[in-house]
Image 1 (tube, one colour):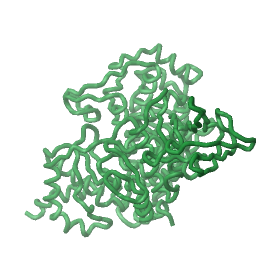
Image 2 (tube, rainbow, N blue to C red):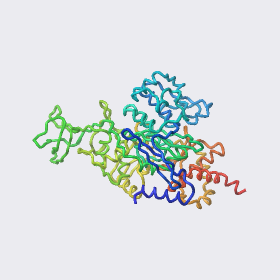
Image 3 (cartoon, one colour):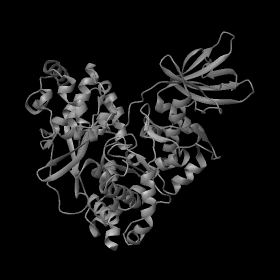
Length: 559
């Protein structure tokens, strides 16, 4: 039984035998070809009502995504929103006196930022844009897109209409939104679910209501551009917490396009004597086929190329080999040359490390990142990447370690260095790639390339209160099924905006300074998510909240 199967089985058993789970089912849909494919995930309980693409669903916060897409492609100005502290909805945006930009506003669901009136969105260019995208003026099932003023959270839309509109956005037009939305599984409302999804999920979250039930979920795209939507009972955060493993297993495969451009100067320290193909000495230019490369020191190696390897003859007559790849092909070749594609979690961690090193050390030349193939930098295989290495690179597409210099070594651990032998050992112990990276780079954060990760500004007062209260809580927590005390006291970090959350892979809690009883309950609540991280009860928001309130009021119980 693999880790995913074990996690799924544990969830099902616990939901059947213990406290109620966050929701009994999750509705999932994606667009394939010209139709909607649906599936329902279950955690026991009665069979859910069937649904299909004709189902009406609330737009919720997804309206902000369509404003973002329109503004990004039409170059409509999106000035930062500055919080004044006078509007309660600014809790989703920023603290008083601070500002939020378009990408952060999209991830944090800051409606004030995207308000059509603030951005002065005119109806005529809006309709022109969507008519061009849809091939016809918005109407019928797409009438909800007819005017910016018609975009509202309570607006009901046909599910297949929503997915069809997402499918109409071309890759270049959705690229900026996808890049921003990668943060959702890193430090947004899907925080800590990156271990299940990698970079496959690029979605905007929403929370609304359907009748008397709270409805949470997300919609957007998979890494290959497949439009996707899912929703279940609860908030978007609780849906991610409860369903991430099953959802990741249920979604269709999605391989991203290999974006970026990396030029590798091969064998920088080893002068070439000759490059021989099947027909004799290779001529300068792109190489196609199999070749034997001989070095001045007498060593030789074989390589294959389909045009990505180029032989150059310099002014002094010396030969030089240069490769030009997409970023994921480059990362995969590093995995093949430096280590191995197995075990998968170690290879995924190495993929992030290699991409991070490239970002930090490559030179920018004519629109490409340029780096040498050398043991002093990163060694890069001259042969096409293996399928397994490519899978690891694509699964972590665009993910990097930010905030610390990234280094790699085969077998010698040191500060901010991923040692392959230790990565393999951790993976074989059942650790996920994000945990392997946290072990290697304790001062860094996992982020989407170019966006930066969330750094931790420690809240000493919060940490001191938690440390003081924990001994009293233990007599209660020892009786709670599934509770495992974190090895170290969690770091409590200042939250700039949005809802508090816990980051299990790095044992961190993001919240605001303690000021009220509700703040103390919040800290207890997020600590419980860490302590119950390996048990389905940790995904049951009602149970966690009740227990957090009980722990906070233990002094009153004693009196």
